[in-house]
Image (cartoon, rainbow, N blue to C red; front, side, top):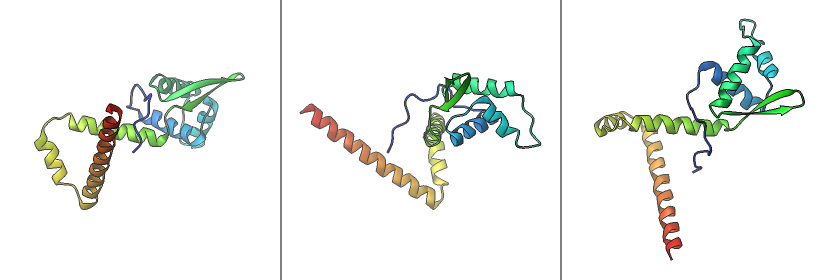
Length: 145
């Protein structure tokens, strides 16, 4: 199981336009403001100012999702986190918030309502956790020797 990416974004929450632009950058690998603006305007029903795209890219950079590099006279943005890493981070964050409720009865009631496929996934996760913990324990014992 891969660990969560480090460093991870400072802020995981994204607005709809931030998410849309981040998806575009993942698809392109890297992009300029013009690349993103042109893609958005391919939909004739959309209007978005060039400056708005710049603002969103800067916001995503401040949140830790993107890095900005200067190439010649243009700036290009590239993702700091892959799409799969982002999904893992967001799932981890949601799970932590769910578990922060701190009431075992609420968590148990939720788990009781899961369908068979979900239960199988939870059992697979539990098995992976057991394997990881055993490996850490074995590693710790080997380092102590």
